[in-house]
Image 1 (tube, rainbow, N blue to C red):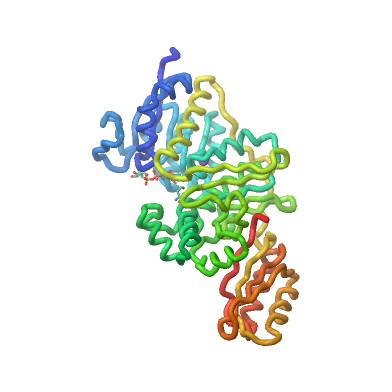
Image 2 (cartoon, helix red, strand yellow; image 1 turned 45 degrees about the horizontal axis):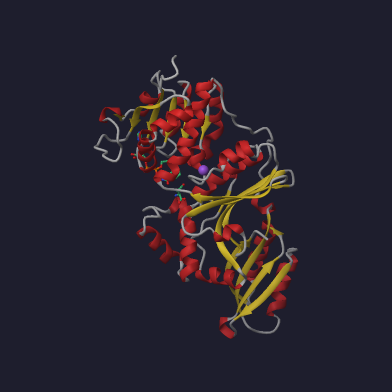
Length: 429
Ligand SMILES: NC(=O)c1ccc[n+]([C@@H]2O[C@H](COP(=O)([O-])OP(=O)(O)OC[C@H]3O[C@@H](n4cnc5c(N)ncnc54)[C@H](O)[C@@H]3O)[C@@H](O)[C@H]2O)c1
Ligand SMILES: N[C@@H](CCO)C(=O)O
Ligand code: NA
């Protein structure tokens, strides 16, 4: 085959990311050809419905509504899947791999749900499967974990990997707004989707946490093993209390090594205002990595948007194209470590607990006794308000999640505690 023979790219999905990928493939064709070693030519674009798409500068004859047929064409070398969801995306990706095409996907839900099946199919076909855009959009983080840090031992990954929730928490922090008000603003400005559940309940971040943990620790982390809490219960009072302690509230995806296993979780947490992740505002994403030899690293940028996400897709596409040209493959799945995912109850963190209490003698002693009875050590206590408005704010030393849960249960049963108004983890020093 002569060197100028193009590599044929099938694009599946032409929404916000797909339209950017198609446009940039056309606009940057010469540079991409020079970098890949052969031109990258669009073989077809699978869409759900045929309609005019003036934003995509390609011949209308390239559009088809049959994705499986497109990716199964013998001439297709590379497939970009940006339709999202589990099915039919999984069937399309499997058909592409079976056809011997390398696949680039931005689909975090699919990779977190069934990454091992797809990796096995890629391995069997001797082709590449890349998904840099699936976690933190434009930010190069999967390739650094998979390749740059492969000689090191990663201990911990802390990420702000959902732009919608980071935008909402930033607004709550800036203006003192409650969750509902900040969500309304995020919706008005187009950051939050009409149904924001996947973002605000932490599902999107949990899928990304599973992918990050699998790559960081060379193990398989099933999505179901990721502990997940969203931000819907975060109150203006939590944000104010964090500020009073020199902290900010962030929704974190956390993956860390613990006692021969790993802990992988998504939940809101108070982090020090001086922590590098505290200065990640609005819809930006960032991932903080701690590795034995490298020390601390931080990756920052745009986690969403058509063009930023297309940047990551095209990076993967050129990498896969180069491998085609060279007749080699990139690294496949590395899951040799086979580490158990520890249950959340065993995970130790510090906690911030707010209690509405009666303001009378013996209350502090009774509260302290509840913590002590479950082996949870208190680091600081402060009282805000008095009489009917008394609030006790306690911060604990590190304790297992199960011990803290048992403490909270007991506190709820105490007559002097009117309400356990908030429990939030404290992370990052
Ligand atoms: N938008 C972002 O900022 C962003 C960032 C990172 C990752 N992603 C991921 O990229 C993927 C695409 O996201 P998006 O924002 O472009 O979504 P989108 O909804 O804008 O686009 C998806 C497109 O796929 C089309 N589609 C659905 N079923 C199809 C089918 N059977 N055949 C052909 N086309 C079909 C839809 O009609 C739609 O146009 C998702 O997996 C998403 O999680 C998106
Ligand atoms: N809904 C995601 C988009 C990228 O996955 C976010 O808010 O970050
Ligand atoms: Na990325």
